[in-house]
Length: 194
View 1 (tube, one colour):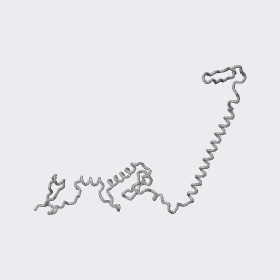
View 2: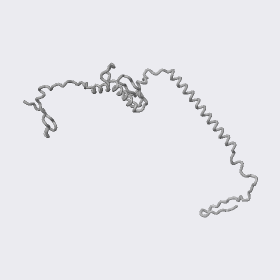
View 3: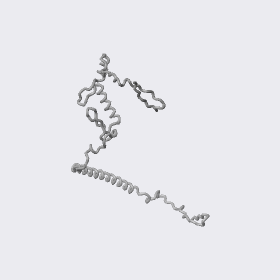
View 4: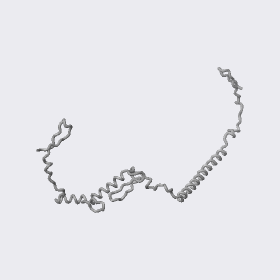
């Protein structure tokens, strides 16, 4: 046996000499790794994992089917709000549940979960329809001319009708308005002529 002497703490260790041990017939130790047992374990683990996954999938399918069946049997409570009642009050955020616009014709356009510019497109179509067909009153009767007809009348020389000008009352003509001064702080006073 070889003796090793480490300096410093005075501790001695002995290592056995194994240089004389030779076994030509054995290239590795058989007890190191049992490969077939490891492969069997991995295969069993994969099979069990797949089996558990399939069983859980079937269980959740069964539980979901029971819940759907239950929801159909139980009526909502007497204090439960309807879907429309549970919405927040107007005005609602664009693209939120229950968001829409009501046109002048009374028609309601649902814009729920649409792009924010969808509201503009709907209103733009309504404005274009009013310009092309003319404005309508509450009962749906024409209340004016379409823009194309009005421009045609102006071009034909019929002009636009306006209210006749009324003369100012006599008592209003006797008043003059003074110019504001620095002392008046911008206030204007009316002075009557005598």
